[in-house]
Every structure is written in structure tokens, then in C-alpha cells.
Length: 233
Length: 233
Image (cartoon, rainbow over all chains, first blue to last red; front, side, top):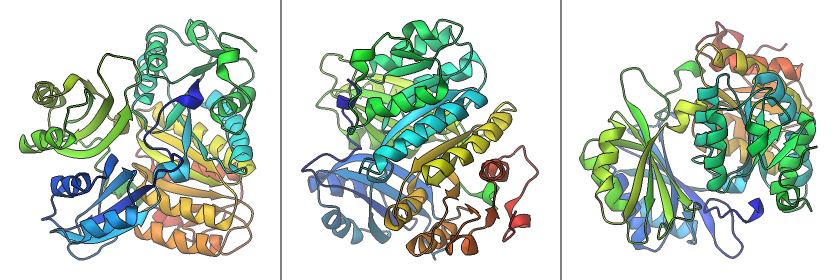
């Protein structure tokens, strides 16, 4: 059941979660920042690196750390005294703001219609306190799409995939099996090719496909993909 | 100019880029993995942590590393002999697959229409070899939206933001100034409130707003936001 997909980067009841944005000079050491957090007992679940773009003197880089099960203000305090650290800001994590992600991949016209359904349905759940975001990429070609399907397994907080096209098969079908094995369910539009044969659910109307995908991962919906597996609408 | 926004996580001519997906047992040490890569000369630009969901024996966790300016196959070789490492797979990076990101935030109805324009335009550029993805979240309330706007600065590969609503101001307007300072331009729909006064560009038609946002960050378009700054369409 997709609702049970474990995800270190989403909020979990009773465990503090927070992000630290660390603005550093040339002499800061990423490994020292990381070991300082780890030695204090913080579990680091994500690190991102950005160039410094605000024009501050000597600041060359920004490291973002997402930490789990540790007070972010205490963590900020720990890092602020380290060599090369210019400024530490405690922030919300991307999971707190953008939540679970619905991923839509396929042809532009159909991706747009699926997204219309998914965004409208996510809006209704987000109004009730959830955080569900809808992320898309329009691509053409079997290999490009198969590569993107495989990459969904590496996307933080991706909880369901919708394939929006008119004909898909071959290596895309193989890639679907791989991401299903990684715990990510797949909804396909009704289309030519072998993709509908392996999808967890097949939906003809793209707006409904987007809507059902959001319902499948929402905590505030009574729709479970397990009861729908293999059906076609 | 948004095209010039530096981004460590996007492909750069002449510099190899790759991701490593490292499946580990309980005794693997993230810091050892990281120092091994760094000591060999690889620049690590992102790390993500996932629970192991494939059911392999003893594998408890997956670390994804994105490395810059170093051969990913050589890096995989380096990590595969370390304690606790069950399997290392070389992968495409998220930047190679999903590219630059257009972020759309606001009310469901308008986010959906802006996204329709952005996805259709991204499709046309992706057909010519670019990678542009369109990511959305539908939210309500000044503070929720302001927090999401600020978090765009922490989103990997976010290159432009569109605010899609009917009335936005207050802290959202303050947050826009902060992300503009971080190098991310903002397009707003024509709407009530102070947000249009600070946006880089104001567009009345949501489909056109999405289209222009993609054109502004595409390498294959002749549209530069610098020449449009402050205009209203």
C-alpha cells in the first residue's frame, strides 16, 4: 500500500524534523559539518549544495542539511561555531513544505491534462492539512521515458507515478517493474503498447487518472490502490 | 539573467556528472563513503537517503550521491569495496533527467492552467534536447504560500517561480524579494495585492504565464526576462 511507503524525508509524528541552511566560506569542511551533526546524534537524511548567489562577502557556497529526530535549533547552534561557517539558518524541510510528490511523465498534451486533475485534487487535500505536490516532465522517445521512470526511484518524496501517453512499451515496461519493486505504484492512461498490462491501475480519462493518483497517496482519502489493482476505468 | 544562474546540479559542458546509488547494510558509514569520494577528487553536490524497499537481505538503506567533475564508474569502483556496501549502481543524476525546474505555487485552478502552458512549452523545448520540468504545489493562506516561496530557494534545480493566484501580498511579497536576491526570478499572474508590484514580470493569461516562464529559462528560446522586467501583459 503506497500510504505505507517509508520515507525518511517526510514528517513523522513525535519526531522533530528540520533543515539547516549553512552559508560557508572557502575553508569550511562538509565532512566536519556532517560528523558534528552525526556525533551529536542527528540523523542526516539529505544534503544539497548550492552556489552562494546573494553576493555576501566571502560566502562561496550553501550546504542544506535535512535532519531527522533531532532539534534543528540545537543543530544550528552546533554548526555555527565551526571553521568557515558564516551563517546557519534553521528552515523547514522540503518534505514539510512540498510533502509527497505525484510524478507525471509522458507527452505534453496528456501530461498537462493529468496534471490538471492531480493539482485540483491535491488542492482539496492540502486544504485539509496535507502536503501533496505534483511534478511533471514532458518527454518523447522510449529510452528517454524509460530513463525518467527509473529516475523516479531516486527522486526524494516521490510516492506515485503516472504515465501519460498514447503508446508506451519496451524498456518503459521493464522500468515500471523496477520502480514498482522499489515500492512506487504506477498508474497508466489507457493506451497502446504493453505499459497498461503492468500498471497497477489503468485509467482512460487523464483528469481522473491525476485525481485517483492523489487519492491513492493522500492520508485524507478512502481510496486504496490495493483494492483497485489491475482494474481499468 | 536566469539562464546564468549557477547550478552545481545541472550538466556542464566538459565536466562529467553522475550519480551513485549505494545499497548498504547496517554497518556502512556515510562519512567514510563521503570522505572516500572527496579524497579521490570527486565533488559531491547532493546526497539523499532512502529506506531500502526492494526486500534484499540485510540491505537497510540506500544512499544516493551526485558527483561533479569525476568519472562515475571510477567512483562506483571506489565505493564498492568499503565496509557495509552491498551494491553500487552508477545512475543518471536528477539534473540529467529532470533538468531545470519551473515551480508553480498558488490556488489549484490557476496552478493547473499555468502548468498547462508550462508543460506544453517545456515539451517543445525538451523535443529539441533540453530538460525542463514543471513542478507545482497548490496551497491556501498567506503564511503557507510565503513559506513555500522561501523554500523554492532550497529546491535543487529550481530556476524560476510562478505565483498563480487571485490575491497575494503581505509576507508573500517579502518572501519574493528574498528569493529574487537568491537569483530566482518570479512571474506573477495579474492579481489583487502587492505581489504583482514586485514580480519580475506580470502576465494576465495563466497559460501564457507558464509558457513565458519556460521560455525565460530555456537555452533554446530567444526570450530574456531582462528585457521584459517590470512589464505587464
